Image (cartoon, rainbow, N blue to C red; front, side, top):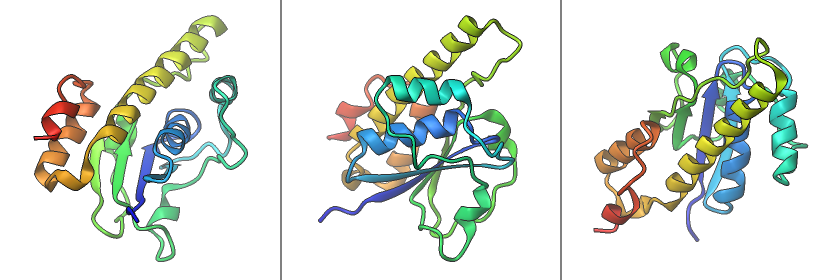
Length: 174
């Protein structure tokens, strides 16, 4: 039986980007990954446009919630294999100590929560965020984790975060 890797997505408010990433990895990484999300300063609720987008794409959202990242540094927390920050602010903050020395990468994506914009423009931002996360997570799920040494894997995780998806999958097979 193949190991299921635990992946934590971090953002400041844990209401949109990290929530969408959690849902996407739960879908695309079924059986191979267990996805979680958290924030350094969680809003306590999910952004309505993030929920709307997930519902439109047939995601079950009942188990999703905005939570503090300290939950994942507790002794009874799942041992993390990967931690990805999806916002620049969270990437610059001092994170808790994660048990198990997980691999980390920054996959920064612009914040779609722009109440200063007309609703249609904000909606377009949420759709763009969803699409970027969907692409990155599909690439991540396709990586042959059991065939990559730690240094090669770190390089590929960083490339995904920089949006350099071309040539990520094929060279990993060599």
